[in-house]
Length: 145
Ligand code: CA2
Image (cartoon, rainbow, N blue to C red):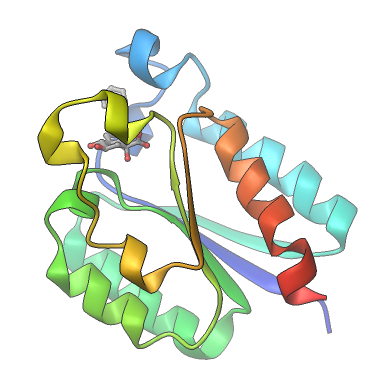
């Protein structure tokens, strides 16, 4: 069976490429979706790529992922630093989870140094811009084979 990977993007990531290029780069979320589709196809995987500005919607999608996906890649945006609800939802998923951030959280404000997501994740990739999402797929290679 072809593996299905759920890719979740949190608040404001729909604005990528329009502002703050010095922090987040010029790549749009659609560009990232295309890059990931190419990489996933090369691995023989399918992607379900989503973005929401709403915490509860992200929780609903994570719960959906418990039954319907083989792995989750998540950039929870600012909810990374605030959301126990997203942590609890991720903890209920018995599948590999990779946390991704475009920017290097540890070079930024101290409130971005803490992530509620990391304890539920297999690993964290941050600071490599859009490429981090493709690296997250690479990280799943051994795990899903
Ligand atoms: O570096 C990341 O990927 C972040 O998850 C991005 C979040 C930020 O709150 C996290 O601390 C780190 C913010 C995403 C908002 O992106 C924008 C892009 C362009 C214009 C405005 C916001």
